[in-house]
Image (tube, rainbow, N blue to C red; front, side, top):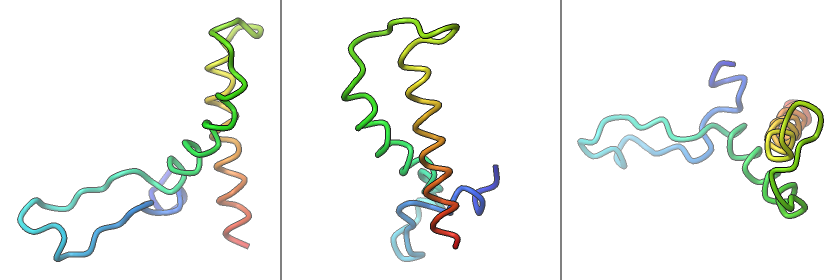
Length: 77
C-alpha cells in the first residue's frame, strides 16, 4: 500500500521542523486509525486465547486495520 493510499502522514512536519535532521516519515494515517481502533478492540481482549488458527490479539490486529481501511474509504468520499 502506498503512502497516499494509506492516507499520507498522520502528523506531518513542516520543512522548518526538520532542522537538520532530514525528513522523517513517521506513521501513516492508516496506522494511526488502526491504533485508535485497536484501543477499543483490545479493551475486550482478555488474553491470547485461540480463535481458529489465530490468537485473539491477531484477530484484533486484523480487525483494527479493517476499521482503518473503512475509515480511509469513507474519508475519501
